[in-house]
Structure formats: C-alpha cells, structure tokens
Image (cartoon, rainbow, N blue to C red):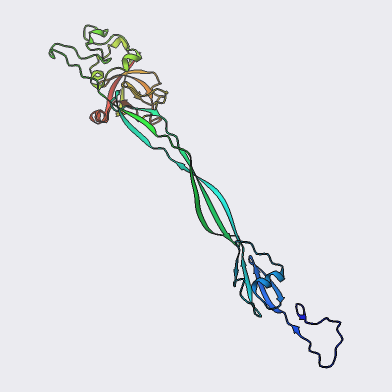
Amino acid sequence: EEGDVLEIAADTPITEGMEIVIRRALPLTIVNGGEETQVKLLAGTVQEALERAGVEVGESDEVYPAMSSYVSSGSTINIIKVTEETITEDETLYYKEVTKSDSKLAKGKKQVVTEGENGLQRHTIKIVYKNGIEVSRTEIGVEVVKQPVDKVVHIGTYVAPVKKPQNPTTSKPSNPTGGGDTASEPTDDSGKRTSVPSVDEIHQGNLYEHGQAAPPASSIIAKTVVIDKITAYTDTGNPTATGTYPRMGTIAADPKRFPYGTKVYVPGYGYGRIEDTGGFRNASYTQFDLFMYSESDCRNWGVKRSWKVYILK
C-alpha cells in the first residue's frame, strides 16, 4: 500500500527460502495551524515523520507531542503556528488646570494666563498569536512624545478700598466711576445726573461705588420699564456674547428686547450697559443679570422682582 516500504528491490528474483520484509506505513494525522491532513508514514520520531511529510516548522511554532517522541499507528501530530506583531498605541496625557491668586485682578475675576495643551504618550506593544488568535499582549516600551502644558488661571483678589464721606450727614455719595465725590458728575439742583455716562464711566468702580451713583434726570431717560426678574452673576472666565470680558456695569439681557449697547440705570446697582445674554433669551418674561465681582455680592443681591429700571437715551 501507499507508504509501505519493501526491503528488497521489487525486481529481485524470488528464490526458495528467501525472506521478504515489508515495512508497513502507519496512518497518522497532522494538524498544521488548524488544518488537518491524513498521511501514512513509516514508524519513527515526530521530527522524522514531519520531515518525510514535507511539513515545515517555524522556530516559534509549538509541536505536540515533542519532536523526539515516537509515533504510533493513529497518532495525531499537532503543530501550533506562533506569530508575533509589534504595534504602537497613543495615549492622551490630559493637562491640569492650575489656579493662582493675583492681587492685581479684581476679586473674583479670572484670567487665563496660559492655555492648556494635552500631551502624548506612545506605548509599544508585542502581540502573540497562536493559529491566528491573539493570546497575549506585552508592553515592551513607553515614550512620552509630548509633555502636557498646564492651564494657568489667575484669580483676582484685589478689592478696591471703600471711600467713605468725611461727614455722612452732608456729603454726597461716591462717584460710581471710582473718582470720589459726585460733584464731578454733571447733576441738577436735585442731585440727579444730567448726562448719559460714557462706557468707561459705567465700567469703573466697585459695587458700593456703583450703587451710590446719582440717579438719572428725566432729560436723559428714554423710558421706564419694569423688569420681571433681576439676578446677579460673577466671572466664569468666559467672554460675553459681545466678545468683551464682563466688568462692573456689564448686564446680560435678551438682546431682542434690549439691544446690545443699551445703557440703563438699575436702582441699587447703578449704571450699566447691555453686553451679554443668558439662558433666559427668548423667555416669556423679562430678566436682567447684573455682573458683580464676587459671589458674596451676588448672594447679597439675591433676586429682585418687578423692579423698575430706566433706559437711557
């Protein structure tokens, strides 16, 4: 049969008493990388059987039973093909936010000094496959490609000194621009302001000075409106809807009702300018959100309802 070996030449004349030896091939199964083949081979070791069958075994391949083992009829030789692959995987190194106190900034105000940048770390990984199936992953190297850059934010701690009048029974309240005596303001005989303040004047001073500003005279009032709800907010580090950063005198409102740039007077707060908006935009009610330098000022303000304000010319 196929695979059998005759010990003498097939054309040798047969003589009386001659011994003829036939070595019978053994049926074997070879499973190479999951593919099964039936063969017949003479007895010997696993290595000899594979060599006779013309099967190549890689350096990393695993052979069962061992190459030095002897095969027997019906034996199965299993060859597991082992391959390796090296890959890289990138990991983002997220930046941290570092805050620092700044005595030159108004209390509560935030200023981004350095923008944060994420870094990059690269991992080199060896993957081992057996018969095409991943069996292990091993990290063999780590490289920091780019270091992250911290985001640096300065938080203001400066509080302007409160200027108190020397004679509280006769002195006028402080100027909302931080300039001191309201005598510098153009006022009429009743102490009401007779000119619309400039943008610079609106944005000067602290909350105390702002609230002490002389109220507007009728000559500079375009109309009087009642706002349903007036709240207060402090700095978030983000610019306003008009691109400026909020300052004392910045007011958020619905720009469809009160266009950006509109100057107003809010009793208890002082003069302001519509420069921002908020989540109440397009609401059925009217709302002003007044900027203040600290959370404590915002809490003290609370919520004012049905508050009369003056739209300036």
